[in-house]
Length: 105
Image (cartoon, rainbow, N blue to C red; front, side):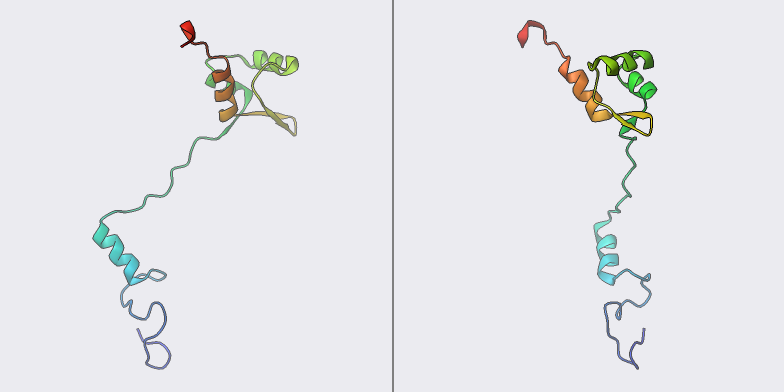
């Protein structure tokens, strides 16, 4: 690769044959380590609608969750634009709060 009137300069000057945007050291590290970095796998949505939240809680009906919201006894939720959503972490915390350990262990 010839840059600047015959002078080889710049970060990719010695990268003959290297894909654009990658330096030879990056390519060499990939080759010598043998490891490839997989893209992060998308996690399931953190926010659940009442039907999905009820299923997550083990079969609680949508009506029961609505009753819990009215009475203020259910899991934490968010209401935006008329839509109710539950965070998985809040559902887990709600279930953990109701945990009973026999014998007080």
